[in-house]
Length: 192
Image (tube, rainbow, N blue to C red; front, top):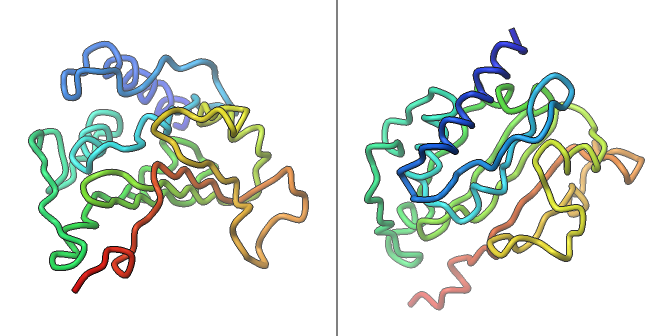
């Protein structure tokens, strides 16, 4: 079953790469190679996208349609304000936990944080420890964390997490955090 869903997922990525009219650019880069029975996934391509764009990616690639953020919501504009309309300022789609295995059976959860209409951070939690170099292959991450793509501020492999569940071997992790831009909290906004 996993093999069939991987093949279907691969087909979705190829189709969306070939004919993506939503943003005018390729959402997913070409899939490189199989990894532990499934295909690598270019999660970095999500950085900085708005909730409707992420919803459309999820709709096209995973056959899941969010009731608000989907391919029909193509003129999305965030109407939030960090001081007055806080909930709207941070609104966004959440990645359905039932779909994480379609990206990888190793994933427990994918958290998405939005701010002012853009994906601010992606947090991936794994079911068990995984080698950091395997993460680079699985998500097509740059090997040199100094030379990050323009729309990525930081990539952390769980180094910033304080947990008794943290792997003892520093070459392994249970978390991946991709930060597009620094979180700006309400106190930082000078709200009156």
